[in-house]
Length: 249
Image 1 (tube, one colour):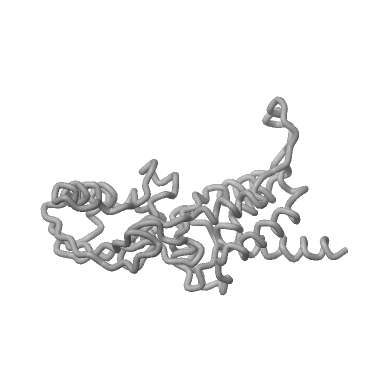
Image 2: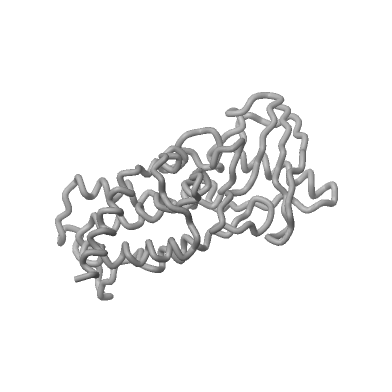
């Protein structure tokens, strides 16, 4: 495959940044998108230039690091797929591919395709945990959980915090991420006692970080590589109203 890549290059958050064009020849359709960038970077290094900076870690669709927008879609054109799991056979010979970082006020650009997603960490630290006494692990069957609720909690816990929901939302909202973290704890009996306090703290931190409001366009759900649903946002809204009512008493 012969391809033309137009990649966003930006030295730092203070640099203006621009798209730079690269020509690639004989790209194997079986390599992943990140492996293709590895090959490109080798060529750039051999030419004496700085390689393209991008985040990556596990390359197994688990860590959520490989955050980039490909031809206008977060993580690329395939549904329920992270960038590291996207293969070049998804593109056509001779195609022009635009690659840029996630765009959001709360995700400042470090360099090239790398953005600072530590805002997600601070939201999680604000309330995304369960307060328990330390000691031996309880017996697995000590607290019964229905299959319905365990399945919903497991689905919400699948969120990898990649930020595709923010990048795809016209408002740069983090509601899908926050609702997933709220849901997977509040649906389980261990997290239920703190659910109202948790959601109030996490939503407050989300607003503090500068994320936009949710207008329920569904773009976040469509872009999510783990297919987190909008039902979690509805659940979070209900719990937020409940927590606000409890707080006012």
